[in-house]
Amino acid sequence: TNEPYPLLMLAVRAGRVDRVIKQQILHDVPLRQFTMPHLANEDIDSLIDILDRENRLGLLKGKSRNEQRHIFRELSGRQLLVAMIKATSGKELEEKAVEELAELDAAAARVYGLVAVASSFRLGLYKDEILVGTGDTSNQTLNEIDSLLRTNILRVGHDGAIWTRHRLIAEIIRDELQKTGQIRLMIAGLAHVGATKVSFTMPRSARPFRILQAMINHDFLIRTVGLESARNLYGELEELLNWDYHYWLQRGSLEVERGDLAQAENFLNQAKGLAPEDHYVDTERAYLWFAQALEHPNTETARVIAADATATLEVLIERWGKFDAYPYHVLGSQGLAWARRGIPSADERERFLRSLVNHVEEGCHAHMSASDLKQLLKDLKSEYLQIAVHQQQPLQFHDPTAD
Image (cartoon, rainbow, N blue to C red; front, side, top):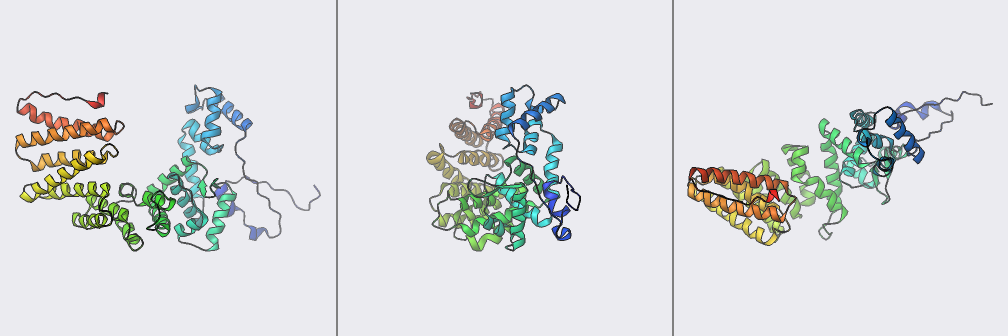
């Protein structure tokens, strides 16, 4: 050309563009960016041919060409990195997704991580929500969002919300954030997004409630951030959510599972006061009563509490058992623990375990896909058989797990 300067072409990973190319240094040097487009049909066929030639088809091996194309075209959203992971299950490719996160500067990585955790729950985020979730309402965060969108690290969905390129990428990034401990900030940010948008009159199916419920679920928090971080998060949200029974239910459930039973009782009583007819609250309170009984199993008070828990769960099973497997599970698992520690009489223990077996067997029939109930039924029968053998009583049970 007749241009007075050379043409320089660089191939740079999207996450590194802003770190490698500094516009303030280039001054008036012309700069044009071309983002790698999505895979076209001919790209997909060429890629499959190369993988086949190099014996690297992985999960695609043995599938028809149409099935192979489907994986690249539909399941991977035409994203090269996602397509390669799905096709080959290659660990190196997953590592590349993690490297993409590591190459971002701190502000961009915070935005990316927040969107990734939300996307892993099938939730997109709007720009204002990203600002709330990162705790930074400055133009820098807006610029980071625009940069991540421009380089196709993030995308705008049909609903106008911002997502990762694919849910598979979101799950890889979420797991990496959990390994490094950074996921705590993302969960707290998303919980605040939901907490600032929900209201007493809003239906529980509304999107802000779905964001909030996903982030404050006590099982999820125990798995991802641990007891103390979960407690801290609930404490941070108390002023915003003290009117919400579900908040107190989850906070109380955390303490029942891993913490302070006195605190659990207080929190669950508040949930009961706000939602006196909610069967989830009643189920968790029965769980709490079993836990309290098991603290001092040899006292008369413990026997009374365990009997109340059993009776409450039996009523809940009668009313809600066809819709919810959890009352069956609480009665079976906590009843088994009570039978082992709180019932010294072999005859009484035998009768109690027989009742538990019957209830959980019924639960297995009502909830055929509940694998935890099937395992619980096996444990209960094993415990019962030990007593029956000791007392030399023949015993026969129907096994719904064999159906």
